[in-house]
Each structure stands twice: as structure tokens, then as C-alpha cells.
Image (cartoon, rainbow, N blue to C red; front, side):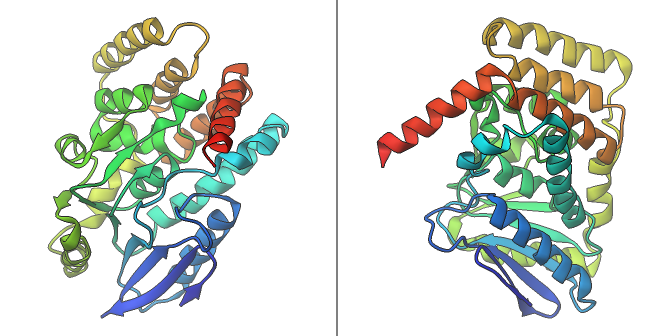
Length: 301
């Protein structure tokens, strides 16, 4: 159905297709420019095929997707702000188009899913996770915050409090912890992952599970009344600001973005995230932390 250098889409059985991330020539999957372009083409191929009844997303590597390709950040982040925002929103449209597919989607998280990798999972209707896998949004460690919908979808899936903790800390979360807060729908032994994903997609196709109802909260405003909002956000901002200090604005800015976008549906919320993400990309903190990260990677080679 579709074959690229990073993604293939193939038919499995009775209308179910597998979208497999397996970046050729690399030991891990990452969202570089190539993978994003192919993700767009793969989603379009699924959309165009009326015989598709459900999609399972898998990885051909030991990890799922480790995040964005940070080597691309240096040149990207030199672009003018307006251009960066437009590029970010264009990438986000791919994730939203995947989320809006007219069939149920299940992601099988076999290993580490970080940053953009987890954000891709959040765009699916259901997430099944291997007990040995870990998930997280570590962008704050680079002076950034999630830019592929993480600040929008995560709070609408696991609640504002939990999402703030995940995003502001940048921590990796074990499968059981992800299940406890509702970030994933099931945790299974690694060898049972594919079977569990197939079972889940079949139930969604048959109508036993209502995938459209499951999807809806991610498209809506964040369900918090004014008092809950004030308590969740103001308390968190004070606490996180004290921990991060003035030279690391990203954790507090992430909370402000979640708060600002809380009263909007997905598409407007994504615009708020994109504007804030670009603002962070231009900070000295992000530039120095990204530089340190890349130097560290060079030393490890």
C-alpha cells in the first residue's frame, strides 16, 4: 500500500493495515524530515483506500520512536519565527489527519517512546504498551516543551495535573505508571503486544469499543472548571518556577501554554502550542542545552 525509507503500510487481515516505522540505516526511529514526509504520505494512502477498516502502528526497532531528530534543530531554529511556526503547524496537521482518520487506530508501544514518538502515540485512539517499554516527554531537558501536540493531547487524556507533572519534569515513565494515569489503555508482556493490538482493533471495528467517543475529548476544550483551572495551574506554576529557576523558562512556559489552550478545541490549542514552542526554540537556554546535547552525542560516538 505504501513503502518508503522510514515507513511501510501493508495489509494484515480483513481490512486491518499495519503502519510500521523502521528508519533504514538507523538503529532507532526518529521524526526527522524524511519520516515526517513519509508519515504524511502514509496517512494519505490509508485515507485514500476505502477497504481499510483499522490501523495498527508498530515499530521495526527495539525502541518505538525516540523523538525528533535533534541534529535538525540547529538549522531549523535559525529560521524566522513566522516560518518556524508555519512549519510546526504543517507537521502538526499530519498528526491531526492521522487522528481524524475515519477508522480506529491502535499504537503498539514496544519500547521507548519519547517526545515526538509519544506525541504520535497520543494522536491514536488506543495505546497498548509492552511492560518493558517507557514513555515520556523530555523536551524541557533541551530548554523546549512538546511541539507535536503533547501539551494539547496529554492533558486531555490524563488530566491537567498529571500532564503538568510529566511535561514539566521531562521524566520517563514505566508502563505501569502510564497505565495508572490513563496514558495507555493496556499493558501486556512484550511477546503478546501484537496480539493485544490486533484484539483491540478488532473490538473497535466491531463496535464493541466506541473509538469516536474515545477520540472526542482530545478534540474538545480541557474539562476543568474555573476554580480547578486556577488551582491546577497557579499552584503548579509557583512550584515549578521555584524548582527550575529563572534561567530555565521552558517548564513554566509549558504550563502557561496548557492553561492558555485549555479553553479551546484541538486546532486552536495547537496554534497556541506552536507559537510558544517557537518562542522557546529562540531562547538562549534552548540553544545552549541543544548544543550541549549534540556535543555529548558526538563524544559518545
